[in-house]
Image 1 (tube, helix red, strand yellow):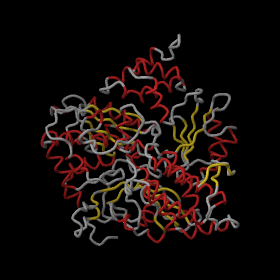
Image 2 (cartoon, one colour; image 1 turned 90 degrees about the vertical axis):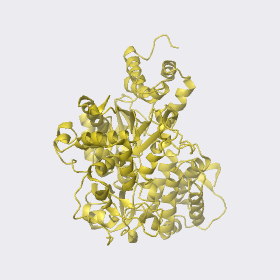
Image 3 (cartoon, chains in turn red, yellow; image 1 turned 90 degrees about the horizontal axis):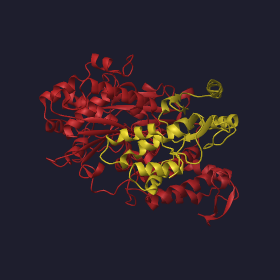
Image 4 (cartoon, one colour; image 1 turned 135 degrees about the horizontal axis):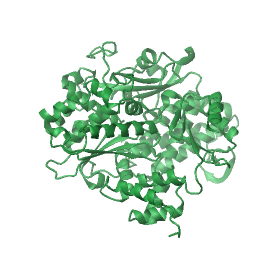
Length: 466
Length: 160
């Protein structure tokens, strides 16, 4: 545990998940009985939109959806004195493999999400908010729609909210099972009624977004944090988490509460709240009851599949916005960890990962569209017992050359595809080499091009080489 | 345009209701596609033409967006129960593969297919976001948690 952390896990009193276990916690009556919407009422009377933006900026709140971009900074990109309309898009397309905490929030405490949306809409002067909700969350849809209806009836939504003069409409826009819609400009294209091809930036959405108007896109959990920052103040928020690195003037730190997800080979999978900076080991052992069946961990995905994978000796890494990068992971991602035990094959891990990203690549950028499919074909061939040691280097070459970081794609999907490949092969190379030598005794050393396999069949196909 | 409209008056009214939510008609495309698939079980090419006319779009624009999302079927109606077996990392780690295999055997179909009696459509899902309940299966609007072969037996019996 970091010695300079303000509030320890043991002292911490959850706020984001405080209502999760209340009976009928999703209803307005229960939410209000716990003080729900008091903050909204007070804020609309006492604070200007600008003051809320300033609070959020001072809190150093960073987006919880994966990229960790400072929310206040994102809001400050909106043009001043814009005649409108300005849009707020709520990113509830949570599709990152291993990730489910937004779902838990929307199912169990949709009013908290709504209060965050209304406060953030007020701060950004948005007149309409669209909640982009993935179709696979039918219970969220039901609960959110019920919450929206209740909020309209109670005067928390609609025209002239609580007599403040501020008006906001909220609509749910249901997705159609496409991962790339979680990318903010893919999401915008999808709302506009087109294929969800991410846009080239700039212009950024804050300048020209939904329907070519200034737009803010924020994750569900991020907006819920706004509610608590407004309610409890910047000092409270900054007493939680990992402080900014004093030697790095550009580090905004990792402050505030986080809903961590935990799944895979653990005794108690679930959604657990802690201050940012909980280590993977603390999450697994103290919250998750350890690896199941008394087994040892082999690998842990720190925050959704895109973030790559940590080896068993990296589990003391704090799950905050900077530490995962120090062990060569992509970042914190969604903070939803997946545990893989000692019996699990990393070849299977890589096959599942490559299959997912090849399926979800939107096809717009060649390096991603082709790279993810080449990688998949190679890993399939390895799995089927036709791997060569040289394939591992070819896979790394693909992984090192697709994505925003090498500068070859429009969005970060390819970086997400690359990281599991890089991490799995660089951290578990011995296991891959053993597998290849064992399953391809006659051909593991071949370096000339070999045919790819027909998808899924394990049969050789003619013509397609790599 | 076919002589008999596929988009019933109810359906047209439902889609028209979405017009108020967005500044463009095109933005109602996804809600419209969902409404049509929910009602007809699929979105056949004739429906694409009718939706296009309703939203002031070219049929090609509707088809372009529709075909991007793997969610909409065009060749035949979905089964009464659309079953999504999650195959993402958390479910896979808890033996989703065995469940999918078992369902394929029991239903006699591959993922993407519908049983001849029109009751079940089997699908694989990339991630249902139900990792805390892995392995999970979504059947229409209901999530089935921590599935096993025995639970699948019970589920299919209950649905039949």
